Image 1 (cartoon, rainbow, N blue to C red):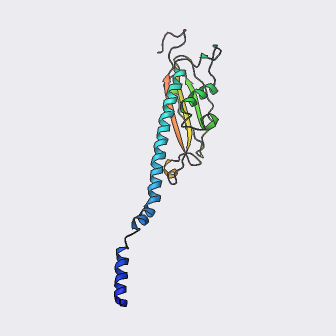
Image 2 (tube, rainbow, N blue to C red):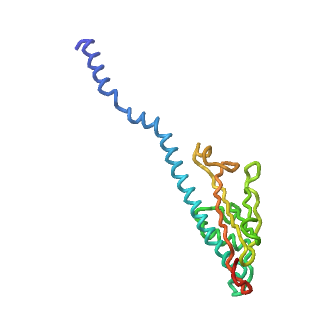
Image 3 (cartoon, rainbow, N blue to C red):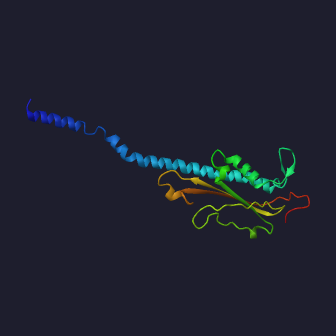
Length: 197
């Protein structure tokens, strides 16, 4: 077999094998972008699900304020005492503890403010300071019968997906702030109150 024939055979074999492995190389080029997009989609979905769960938990817990159950909270001993801020937080966290891991240890912040003069006096100030840090919220005023009450809850959700923090992080330190609120007028739960006007 001549040198020319061998070269032609080698050329044909190389040409036939030239496409082997191209799919693996193409996937290696596309895979990082694909997996970042996939991670971002899953994380954003979980984040919005946590937001919805926190809103639902806040609505359920705020109902205790609205119906006057915080004014007369029945303890395990059967006595009637006013619900404390810590008990309110425990009630709220018990409904979302599977999603919000640091709920009871300080990750969740909330405030309850009553406005006896009605909705026009209610204010909803930003929970963030000028450096985009979450303020320490401590107000816990459940009000009386027929008072307007604003209950707010905030949770700093850590953003893990690379690049997603540019779009989703709105709090210092690569966190996304989950914010929920419920505004309502307390029911006339006091026996001295005939009805709300």
